[in-house]
Length: 316
Image 1 (cartoon, rainbow, N blue to C red):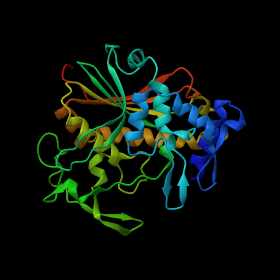
Image 2 (image 1 turned 120 degrees about the vertical axis):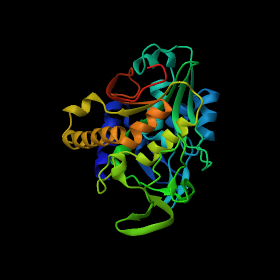
Image 3 (image 1 turned 90 degrees about the horizontal axis):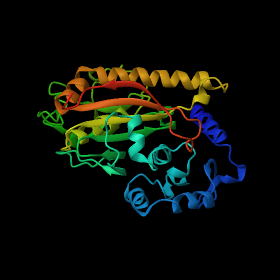
């Protein structure tokens, strides 16, 4: 998508690094201009602590290694200048306890930060990854970061394992209790593409049935199911989107970018305020927050802006 490529080029230009730092070459000799050069990326990986390195290597996202896809090899995701995993790693890896005060007041600074943590969805047996967690005895913060993904197309569909006798994910308080909603076949462009996947009525989640999604709301739902399954007393799902201040007026494409960000904000707010999601968060004591990271370089001091906050914890 052209707008995504334009976004990546601006993120690259904001880094103000030498041109020879970029241009990842894959095993089949393709060059990716908005990815760090192989040797530069190797230095980045070598700088990781053993724990962080192991976490990313054990994940299923291909963050640190090339993968062979349908059209050949693709670079490691974290080699991209606009990688969301690179973004959250650079944002939180140092002085994480102190940085948590940007997202939540009165939180202990001696908590534990973990990247690529795994959640568990009962019944289905799925284990979706969450980008980062910060846990103390009193609170657990779950971070999902997004960068250029908001310019992608996102699928709204689940495998049949999420449906039991036509009911989406059970009937207890940890389910979404969509017991009267019939699953729909999974269509793209009016063609059923996978008989093993089903969609739900978007309008039950505050989304218009025909609109293009600016966020992976299917992943959003799965993260909520997994977070509800944890034993943490106070749970917060924090979405951190990268929106450098420079995008506001410094580039010709800013108008197009900001239109997408406004669509994202509208969909996010409608989703969280829907009866289905708001009741779910109330039953399971989950708070949801939407932040922008506004620093112009990912390597700059983290600067955030709170846009939305929904739900409440046990003690609120």
